[in-house]
Length: 297
Ligand SMILES: Nc1nc2c(ncn2[C@@H]2O[C@H](COP(=O)(O)OP(=O)(O)OP(=O)(O)O)[C@@H](O)[C@H]2O)c(=O)[nH]1
Ligand SMILES: [Mg+2]
Ligand SMILES: [Zn+2]
Image 1 (cartoon, protein in one colour):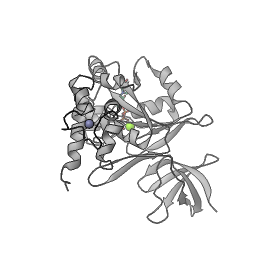
Image 2 (cartoon, protein in one colour):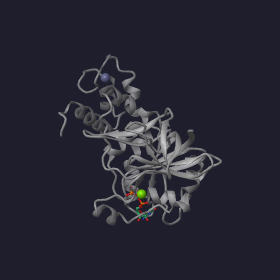
Image 3 (cartoon, rainbow, N blue to C red):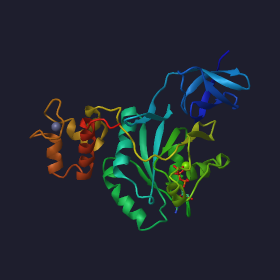
């Protein structure tokens, strides 16, 4: 007989399932189908000393990235994505834009946390680089997990009652944040130099941690990523998923406009008038160019 459960960690094809009473059972998928993700609601049954996944319930949403070769899913059924950046390592604006686009297309609310406020002047520089994101209405929260722990109150308020995926590059403090809210998680953290020089990320798999089970507050720790592939998207998705371009793209008089070359295009006019940040338009151009590039193997 199948029982309902929640996937709280994934180790390749095998997942840890939490039963309704809170016990955790290692479950194996049945056959090639039923690959479950953290955040998935599943039906499982006892199979020997472990469990087996009988079915994965329909998902509300799923966040994934896709490069030429493979698809990597982060998690399913999310209320929000907390995109974590740090004063160090210096973040890639292209990767930030890509992950925000993926969230938008998946219909998941995203907001940014900039950690390591103690590291100046790097923090100030990173804060300034996020100006165009604040301008488009994105919430950007400054944080310092190390010293004064400023920003934590606002953060707590935003997390309450939500299933939030903590996403971002390696070494920004994602696991440190999880450990702050859920000390029992004892998520492994490491100095950046150590993590990056070894060519490995400290966190190697995604796992869900309850901050408050009754209130439904949980955080999902995830491995840092270097590049966020968007091969699952189409040309028309990009302008629609970039809020600062979308306002002008929606007004563009041309049907099926690429907003790249068409004279009189509203997006290009807005760029010329200084109403779109040039760096943001460059990212759009890059994404569109990538679609037309030959597939590399
Ligand atoms: N200076 C400073 N260091 C911090 C702060 N918060 C976390 N760190 C440090 O940043 C380093 C990386 O932290 P982690 O939590 O392991 O980073 P991560 O994002 O989980 O990295 P991956 O698991 O590789 O993706 C650790 O040495 C932390 O102690 C902060 O506010 N200021
Ligand atoms: Mg980590
Ligand atoms: Zn146009």
